[in-house]
Image 1 (cartoon, rainbow, N blue to C red):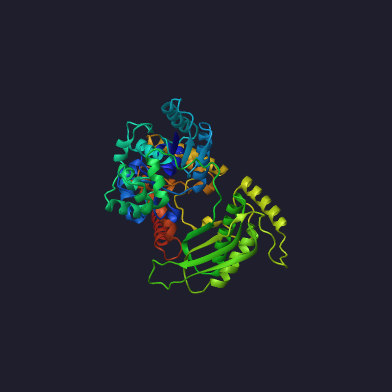
Image 2: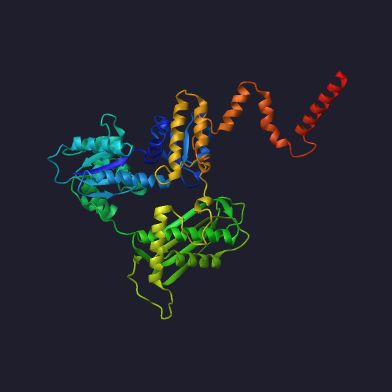
Length: 514
């Protein structure tokens, strides 16, 4: 038997771990630059919010229904994913990390155990150790395990666990062919034209027909649906054949210096990925592009590739090549919205020999320097030690993340955010509203504006709460005090004239009394 463990609404669940007040509340997590919805809670799904839906289309719905919105915190999600995977390794001899929130566990040879009890134990342990809910599906093959996991999520009676062990034809009749793992949109439309609408219909097709129209990959899926294992557990995943880092900027960039810093950040990030999988790159390709949606503006897009005489994973050499490529493709007068760095020709680090007679680069020295840089950044945080060509504030300065949650498990400064969440929870339950304000100002200055909670029940800041309180209680003097700050600049300002008039009236009153 093979088990598939999948975290329910992973990004949302990670945010809820550190803010219990969000439980049973509609929550969504946005993509890079806060553009589209990439994760939804069950409550948000019930409101009709779709996966990948742009935020501007549901802005009124978010405000009306009090939906909590978060920017994607990939550092937090990656750390929580590692905790989940390390927990799952206690339950099976072999584990394949399929994605950030999914893993296959090899239970073959353990059929004599009570697998249902073991699945429930997995759910309870992950929830107790990490704090996120998971669903467990078991089947004789990977494809059947995926289907069992889907059924475990959809059925309330399953309680997060489902096993397909003997007869599963009835379950396959309830699964649409488009929901089968490995069947894409084009193949779904093709199969439906031939009357194959469910997973069970696919198992009834002949092997020759499936191989002819869906290739050998489709034939493997069919056999897996019939209970014949064709896909093994891959504990040692092969290295990536290509590595890249691309971003859409928060604001368009105009100058070559700004683009150079951005491409240097991307090249450095690619170098980290290469060294993590012990690879080197022979080709670097950089590209820049304007906003193709803004059709009223002039459009421009170019790319340039640089070949290394010796494959490398050194950040210094990659940054130098990226800036060289930028110099060949940059044109002034355009507003660049997107850029990226792609690496190809990957091979194991140190496998390529010297291919140029006069190559004076000291690659062993670069390797030692990169090892030291990675060790320091791993201990003290990313970009603690970086190339001088990179963006001073880090690449995150170029992206839009207005609702980013603190790094609860990745930064010491983010630990204080937990006190804020606890205080907010108390405020939601009717406690003294001033208590969470005091907790807010105890946070580090860099985290005071990092709270992503925006709803009518939770004031976004103490100053806004003070304004509403002053208006509700009829404190007109406080209201004038809050607005006078913007009117004190000129000697003829309204606030200045009013103050002078009051002083003059007081002096006249004193003179009359004398």
